[in-house]
Length: 342
Image (tube, rainbow, N blue to C red; front, side, top):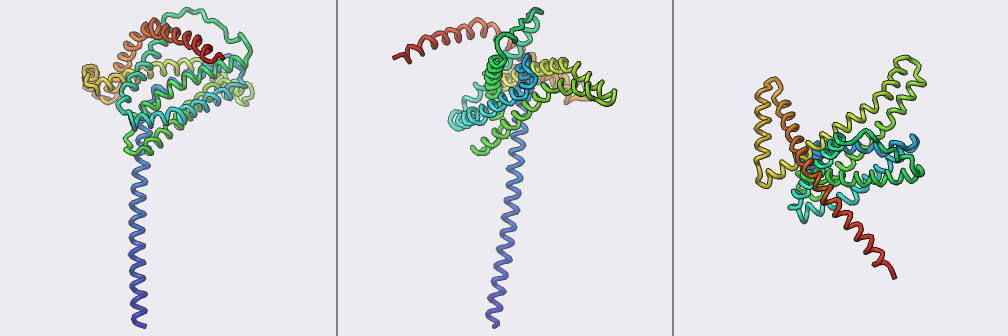
């Protein structure tokens, strides 16, 4: 009997030891899980912040694609573009980014600089167009039927979104610190989902805000409610213009900062050194808010650099790249029918 009790006592001791080990393993797993989750959130936050300029421009550009179309089609059109954007990011661009990261990481710097140059060109081209364009605007939106116009608008929006999405995913990839392939893919997926929801959710709010204002002005029971509705309708054009200006400035800032940073990585440090020195001087002058003053100075100089780069690219694009693409398109139209003919 004593032997049986001793055996049971030993079994109980082993069970307590096993339970302690399980608790220890669970605690360590929880710590690891928290650390991994924290790393994913940190990577996603860094990537999202870095792509802010592209995101703002994406949100500023998209409302233009529903102008001149029936109000009832605004949300379905934005939904079409959002679905295509998500498909582009998750099905096409994310696998390409993973392949790039695994087999050709050296391509990341050239791609980032190419994307930065594109942002600089787009921002500078918008400014150049606003300065040089006349007051005459062609109202060609009414030509043709609404369905054809909608198809054209959606196709154009998807093409623009694909370029911006490629830049977003490339920037995000450059900011991810995860050493795991699956971790990198997971963070990229989070960035893709989050940014798409943010951009197109904001776009829906923007394009329907005037309808909401009109409704409030008509059915509001209080004078203040009706006045608020009228104010929303009146101010929405100014809001869209302000967002467009902010988006253009953000494109120049992000594009310029990308090029300067990658030039520094390649050993060309003069631009980065000059801008950092100016930011440090500004921070010393404004002692009451040194960090803000330094950041504003750096952002402004990055944007100015981006504007200069973009203005230099405008004639290159207009007189070299666009004619070259037009010739290639003519060759394609000539070759493809002959290749497919019996």
